[in-house]
Image (cartoon, rainbow, N blue to C red; front, side, top):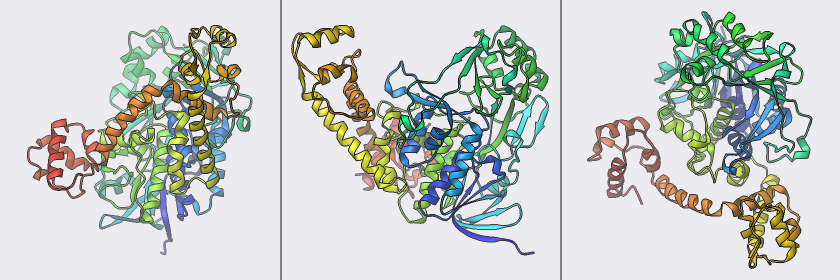
Length: 627
């Protein structure tokens, strides 16, 4: 019996958020690319929350866009509500979040994929990796067809040997009852790839007509819309928004959960996988936060043309009858009708310590991995890994150096470095607190930080890059101007300052000194700034942030300087740590397991002490490896 044999440059296994970004990046870099999915219904699917962005995740989406990825553009086309979170705090933690129309998001992403040159999409289950002498050669599907490729990117999400569970009901399916990928795990293990078993979950979907919104707090979107994509302006994407709603669990809810804990697979041992600490089920919350008498519940529409409402904050794997009782105990949901049950899903993923910072496997040339298979959680975390894996697969084929973003360049750099350097025993979620240099890595300046890299890689067109250079030039010119324009203590100035509860002037000061005042903004000073040029908001926003936080920014830049020195001290790939005198046994074991690329990365490995780093530096220096 003859089998199909085809050849491609890049093969992407999985079509979720990581797979889409990986396939698009590779194809846009002129690689003949094929993306496999077990079902066309999986493409860019949102199996859990109906939103993109959020705290720190919004940073990732804007970084994806700045590098030339698709997620930001797609949510700008398909959002139904938009909000900038943490606006009462400093700009370092401002994060954009948008509710998505789930079906429209998929539809638009699918259209982009079908319209992209060099990209083929194929519905088939990949069951086997073809590897010879530790080099990837291609994949085999369940039909026996063979697809040869120079690089393979695994983006299997939560589908590997997936099992959906609620109560004592267990189905061997992926999210939303779609087919699981049951055979590839065996092939991974046969090639020495270490697997973990992780778990995540999702809440029920409730019929909108069965909810009493009058008992809930309405949550509106922002009046001013900030696009995710730097290619869009507010007027390009502004539209009528749909409200979300806020309600709370109560003591009755908690009592229902407590008396049924013995029926929860989470607590009975029926679930083997480790769940996410920062996105716990409602059962977990009630047990771990026993002192709290209520928890927030967000009621979020899944789209414009559906009655399905997502019950944010109440994911669960309790039995169906308990779910009805539990949801109906919440104010406004007394008559709730469940459209889809809440469930937990457990799945196979890899130990990400097996990857280089480029997301290529250390021991298998040409095999890359991105997204939830790497032990992360979330659409945004998946998307950014997919983008980098797609870029680096293409660059490997072309014999170019991998693009590796470090912790001082991007949240993406922090995320990937954490995954490949720090031991991950639960699904990894990005948070602003993980980024040491977060004042420099703001969501508002992602284009200034990363678009030059996207342009150099080949994913950003020249026109967009030229606009960025113009923006940079105008920011620098305006910072210089306001630092030199002096404002005297005349009547108009004093009245303006008093109107904004700001101390009157005793002597002339620069505009920049006034902008530094917490209560004064760049825009407020318009009436007394006679020679102000007409500049777009994206320029004046950067001018204001730079001036207000100049001292803090300079301090972080000094820290980055020290960080860069450590990152620049590369460790030879063939180093034998056993020969490094005075290295502790634990350090030798950890360094052998991780094989860090630099002294900086080595210093972040748990179990490697500052003393070990000093010993390593002396050894490398004496062997002329470190400048």
